[in-house]
Image (cartoon, rainbow, N blue to C red; front, side, top):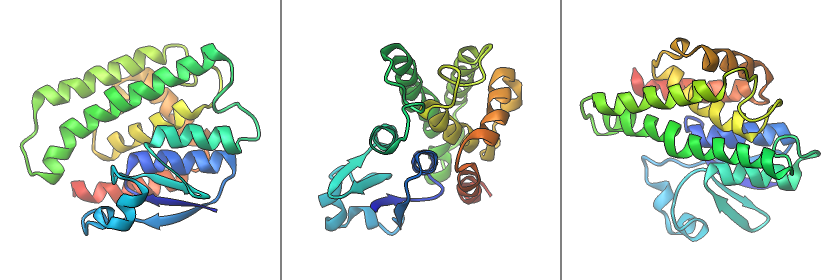
Length: 209
């Protein structure tokens, strides 16, 4: 069984948990207390020199970056390729959505909320505009679409639903974006592991209370 170093409140960690559930892989979950500096211990840095979570260790093979782990789990353990199809064009669209999530959507969350949560900085209106722009883009991608990339659930949906649900518990109004809202309501029903994802969101919500 693969070891999985994580925190339940972390959006990238939750995307991996949902992907593992979707492919039917059980992970040996190892909580890593970042506030206590457990990620900076020599034994963890030896596994992951970048000392980030999530980190997967599968039979001696160590991998970090959540979206890379998602793809690895599907390619190694998926019974079919439906979550990450082999067709180059379908896969390209999924990759685009994954990179959008990493570099635009989730990044906008980190840039706006993290300084407030962890550095007690004031809210930055310019950073909030970047969130709105990211949701505008996602709303456009989802025009006439039930899923984020193609006509069925993929790792792109799983990564995005982990991010969007985190925005929800942060108090961001998703309902203003009709296509995102419709996609999100469906994703809650069809994404394996949604319940664990939501439990992690509620754990993260404590930072906002």
